[in-house]
Image (cartoon, rainbow, N blue to C red; front, side, top):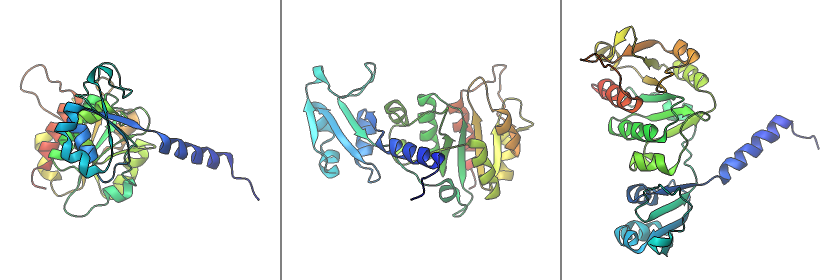
Length: 260
């Protein structure tokens, strides 16, 4: 039998390792929504008596048996600073499928959010909330150098992680090229953009659009910027004209979702 090439073996090993990874979600909102999500592979539920009472219906409908623990000896392996509210759930990361399937145009003019090395889980979680509120099809980030699916991200997302696709791809630039091939207009956000977001928004209302945001400080990387069709800025009324990335995402999603 012919041996598999080393790169094929390595890829299969990485896939199996990824399937074994688990995430601990914590907090009442994050745990409740994960219990209600049929896409979630749920492994272990740890609750205090008070949290079990508050999550009663969600727990019983999920079919998972909770471990009831003393709040002074909370046994889930969480960081000491985690505000768990007496609830923690071990799960496997969600599988949102392929970029081409998620992003395929149809049903109006879809809106995507692309994150270029946004590593802070609180920013990523807040962006997921905004994406859900304003009807974005998905949030897309590179598999490396981005915020992974964690309990901190899920808690900040306040349940949006269970409903809003968060797809991490091998290479963001390659994903942008695929989206351009699908007919998307790639719109980068930058404080020195040639056009304002307000002026550009009406012309984008009928086009599949991907908003591209860079990390705070470094901003968009060179290749990421070069692949954008348009670079927009958010005008500020005062001299301090800087928004953090999650606020910039919310503003741009609001502006570009109008009329879709």
